[in-house]
Image 1 (cartoon, helix red, strand yellow):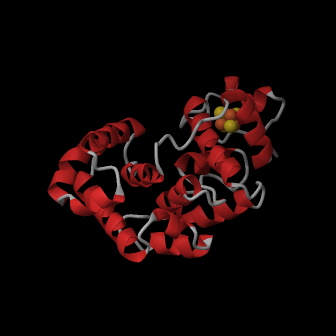
Image 2: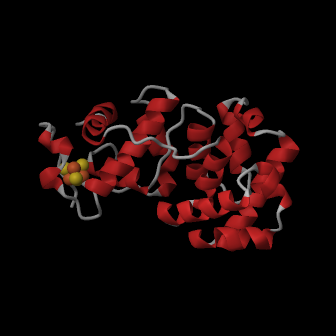
Length: 220
Ligand code: SF4
């Protein structure tokens, strides 16, 4: 069976570095991680551009602006009322609890993760995105693409879903270096692979994982 590390090496050669997370600041990464829930990245880019234009891409600004104004700015990314509430609560609770994002990221990984998971609207995928890409903690983000690929490559039986988030994360992290850069790149490359080849209906004929002589039974 192709190991997660071997898949990473092949993906990296095939797709190259993905440059995640595309952002100018850790605050922008956190905002993007919250806004990207249930929408495409293109929509998030639009919402982030609107926030930047208004000078609202900072915790301080997010604390101060009115929720209705925030709704208008982030409207392109969908579920904007909920997400405006999540963003404001996130910014206010960081200000109250830590003053800065860095102070949160200096906490041990488990403590920082539990704190994030106790915020409204922040689930495991969002928390781990924030911790890996903004906090530079060695933790792997699991998403539906990874769950699909892992089932097809035989890392777990069939197509797991988000209920198996922790199990998939443990299994993959046990087989990858504990390094934030590698784990961040691994996740980005898995997304690239799922979009390029391992789609819902997979393009196995041109898949680099098979071209390189590795075989596995695609599940569909
Ligand atoms: S061979 Fe097909 S099922 Fe397997 S990883 Fe490649 S695209 Fe996905």
